[in-house]
Length: 278
Image (cartoon, rainbow, N blue to C red; front, side):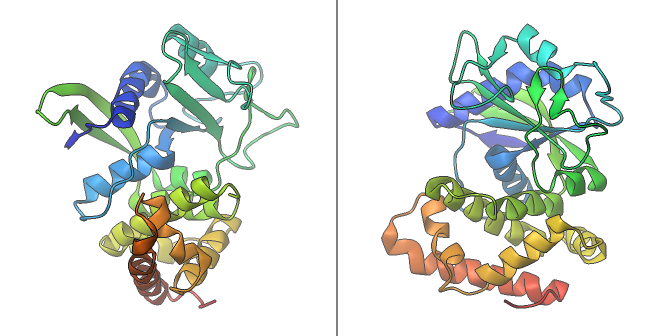
């Protein structure tokens, strides 16, 4: 897959991904790209024509279990990121889960963990990295890791980087974003995550395997959060639906248009999966 990444934020994302490629390779099967960049790549890979939201940060979800095996005093993520030119704790507003480039502080990697995966009371992913849990990550790992070979190019076609990116399945990408919306409060971040979740729902609607996996999934708190989000967003007058245009970077004049689009997507998804209305 070749993608054009031309904005400054997109170039930062490519540089960050390229720098962490050795870590992604070493943790293969136990690491996933999540967050806004994940949503962008899953949407682009699907071939569905949707609005694009540029993002620069790289968010990684890591399991403590096989094949990573972060048990006891084992530390694999932090030491490797430091070897690759990152440091944690430099950003006072965030904890030790955030790593920034020593020479390029605009390069940001957040390392997040699977909810309820700890085997003890230590609130750490590994020694030195606090456990910040990503809702939906347990569902995502259960569906498997889909490694995508992505070539990034600028507007003129010059190659910026070739990266093997560990992506979640489309249904898992949707669960990750939809389950996260209920935990957000900062308006710009909430709007961005809502827009991502609706776009990923549109991708899921075009993928029978994704719909089947959601249909067969056992009821969990993650899936319950998704159902609540879908039911709320199926109403074009809801706050969820009306913030989609903001999340995609459009002005207020586009709010009704994108709220109607979001509500239609969610109603189709709700009906297909036989999820309850609001």
